[in-house]
Each structure stands twice: as C-alpha cells, then as structure tokens.
Image (tube, rainbow, N blue to C red; front, side, top):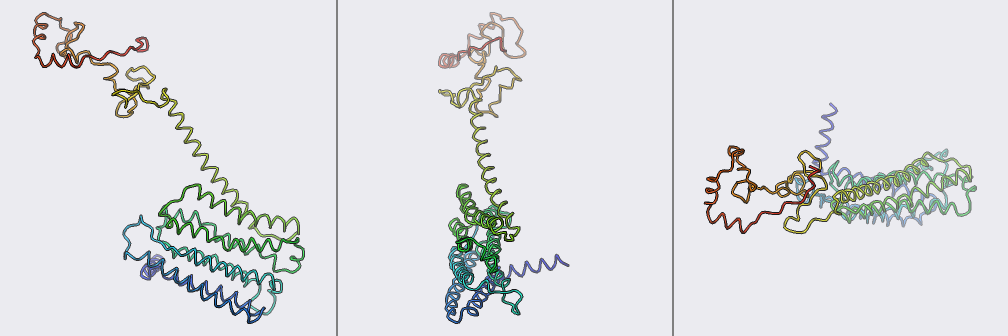
Length: 407
C-alpha cells in the first residue's frame, strides 16, 4: 500500500515537472516576509510598511529565478542524457536580495524590541515565532537549491553540490540559536561591551554567506564543470572561519564569561571545525603518499627512469640476471621497460642458415646431435646469393658481456 502511494506521488511530481518544490519555496518565502513585516509594523508603526515594496521585488525576483531554472532544465523535453546537468544561473542573486532583506529586518528587531517579547503573553507572535520566522530561511534555501538543477541522485554532480551546500541549513539554524541570548533583557545586561554588536554581525554574515556556494555552483554549472580541490577546501575553510569559529567563540564567552546557558550547537561547531581540517589533512596525506610512491618507482628502475638511447629506446635492461624464473625477467608484453629475451641473447642460428656456427649441428630437433659432415657443409655453401647478401648486410649482433657466474 505504501509503495503504491510513493509511486503515485513520484509520478505526480514528475508530471508536474517538480513545480511543487517551486511553489513551496515561494510560499515559505512569502510567509517569512509576512511574519517579519508583522513584527515591525506591530511594534514600530506603519512607517515600516515600506518593507512591503522590497518584499514584492524579492518575491518577483525569486519567481523569475525559479522559472528560468525550470525552463533551462526542461528545454529538451524528456531527459535522456543523465551525464549532463541542466541548471539555472540566477539562484545566488535571488538569495542575496532575500537574505539582505531578512538580515536588515532582524537587525532592526533585535536592536529595538526583541527583549520586550514575552512567550507567556497572550499572543501567538512571541520570541519563538520570531525565531521560527528567521529559521524558515534554511527551508527556503534547500527548496531553492532543489529547483536550480537536475543532477541525478548519487551522481558526481550531486555529491559535488552536497559538498558545497551540505552545512548551510545547519549553519542558519545555528545562527538563529545563538540569537537566543538577545531575547532576555537580563542576559543582555550581562554582555560585555560590544558583544551584542558582534553577535548581530556574525548573524548577518551567516545569513548572507550562502550566496557564496550558490554563486560557485552557478559558475560551475552545478557540477558540470568541476572546481579544483583547493577551491573546494578554501570554501570549507571560509565556512569554518565565518560561521563555526565565531559562533563557538561567542558561546564560550557566554558560558564562561557571563554564565549564560548555551545549546548543544557548540558541539556542532567543534565537530565541523575538526572534520573540515581532518578532511583536508587526509587529502594532502594521500597526495604525499602518491608522490613518494612515484619517486620509489623511478628509483627502482636503477637509471633514474631514463631510457637508453638508440633504436631500442623503448626498452631498458633490468638489474637482475636474465635467467628464466628470475623475478627480474619480465615479459615484453607485461613490461615494456624490459628488453626482450631474444634481443638479450641473440639466436646463434639466425645468421648461419640454421646451422650452429661452432660446428655443433642444426637447431632443428631432428638434426640436433648428428655429426657435422662435409656433405652438409657443401649443401650449406650452395645457399642462394640472396641469403649471402642478407648475411653481409645484417651481420650478427655482438653478444652482450654477461657475468656467466650469475646464470
């Protein structure tokens, strides 16, 4: 029953061409804007109705961004090539405008009346609703990211996207959590001078920072063009320096300096920092091991990896004795750097008409062992002139001087 419902849902979403994610993204963005506008108008007056104009611009830009991405993805009709990633190019622009608007509203709220909000008051719009409104940005980012590409699940492109954006949702939630201290007037009075401004600066930076991975993905066509590993590591270090390290520092100061309660997100900051640098260490460790392996492989050749000059420069002698069964003797088919055995030990019969030049007979198995008669010599001397010319033209190669004791 459940499997049939899942299949029906998949078919429905496929028929709608992923528009449910786009509609939900627009709906959550509209809800976030409306909630923040309500707080501003309710507590600061109707002069803040001007925010509605900015919201209309941001919502229109978000709709254009989603439509442009959907058009680029479905421009070829039914998809047949899953190696090509279709994507939009304006996602970072929409997020930048929306995040600036949300950050500006949050700054106005927290510097004016956030500590006046009381959860026990007879109203729905308390501090928890305000925190939820800001945290809606994490869901908006995730849905916006889904609408911007069609990378298949489990593909290299999808893993590339997840590597750049996998922590954004948790970073936004982490930012909302650290603003908790600004809702209590008693806790705010305990803060050091300038700490409140520092917390708000970190929060604004964290809300705007997801623009960087969206811009990076747009420039690389969401994994179609891979970035160098150094840029990926630089992006992860930027997230550590701009998000996790400042939040960890603030939480440690609140804990030990002001005896303020903190959340388990401090462990998230520690783990994010540790795992980021550990992954970078693992990458450079593997790279160093590969370079050392290449150097050892060159040194094992005995000649610094250089090939002998001459017509047989594609082959090189080994340092071992060329004895059958010795580990130093390799087949030319398996190791092109080893000289073939026929070239190491030239065939003594090749340039003498099939006869042993030392008088030992023929190399033919039937003639081997027979005495070398004069009649055989006469018959051998009656070879054709063509054979004699070849023998004069191609003299036998000199036999390499090997140490016989090593055989």
